Image 1 (cartoon, rainbow over the protein chains, first blue to last red):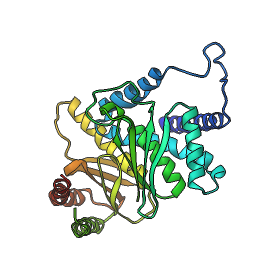
Image 2 (cartoon, one colour):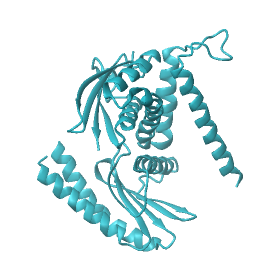
Image 3 (cartoon, rainbow over the protein chains, first blue to last red):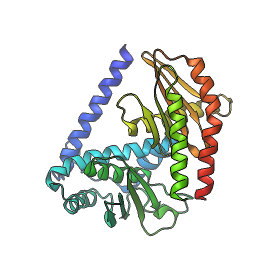
Length: 187
Length: 134
């Protein structure tokens, strides 16, 4: 019984920490406790190491192709949390919602979110992310690598429309495109 | 791909999933694509399909990697026997997997037999669809 209890304990702690993090992000906190000398910012390479090694190649080593689903779901979870946090301010208005998301993603240095096409009747939303934090400076890859960001976009749209969505990265700086494109299909 | 072809394919898949659902104890039958999305599902109970799809791919991916580590080559099926039932996951064509959820009344042998019979049929449908997309 002990291992299960430990697992539940860890899950609730991560949830609680995630909640604190989102509150801090939305409050625009520029100071973080216990970072008096180093400050709140870290180099982009550290994020990319977390993203592409810890949540990339290491994960792939352990669960193979399952890592695609895991990384997407992780991004979708973040999108759900961020989307849920700004939803009340958006008052059901997609433009307002996107504006709020643009503010958060820019402030956090995730990138510049640009909407290319919205066709809610057809259930399609296309957007792109300039200066994407995951693949900036990365080149020569054989396929798009920003599955986490695609998941995050999926989670943001899913939260707004209240339906399942599938988001796919169609363009990526890592394969030579100028930006990262994400096409979202509302299911 | 023409809409009629897609509709026909969906109809065939739904029929196969319904047949699997008619097996004793089976409470859910789903197809999951390589990204962990549930593309087709038949179910007897409410289920978070996003979470199921990702969990299925992670479960199958972990088993596949484990098999490779012990030089047992490819993975044909993964079964998780749980306190309240079981889950069965098997690979299909084009990166898809078939996932079955069953309760305690399920007969593992009969489900395994039916799944083995069904896999080539589903793979053929999915393979044809992947070729048509080019």
